[in-house]
Image 1 (cartoon, rainbow, N blue to C red):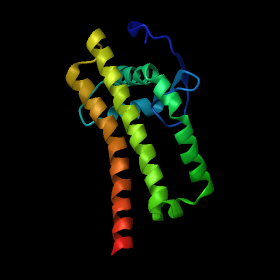
Image 2: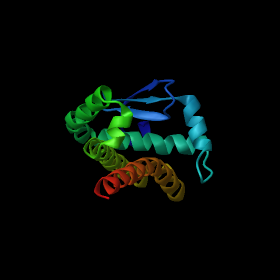
Image 3: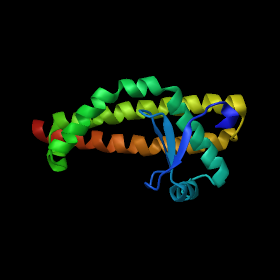
Length: 165
């Protein structure tokens, strides 16, 4: 973070998530155990320091886009309340409710892509992670969000197809 000029507070959090930007309070948390596992899970071999640097740039990328994240709070609260008030099987069986989850996942994917674009800009400026490794880490990270979204869209297509058949 020092090399990029960003001064975000960093806190250890043994939550099982490698690194997260908490945009409401403007700080980053990391789980050292999960960071090691996540680095080892990369399809392209990367060292731990390289992985942490790329993910840190990604979290800074979220910080650059903080206002958009803050603006998304009302929609996220609506989805959170829906999840708390309606059992998961009911949500996944109702095309309207499942559509709301899909919209939330689409918003999240846009935020993730934006954070990686911002991180790429920083990486190009400061040349902290080799280009090919940075892109491999970004691609694998985005893939988890894309897979989740695709699975929900397939489920929705099955529900809608069953309802119209």
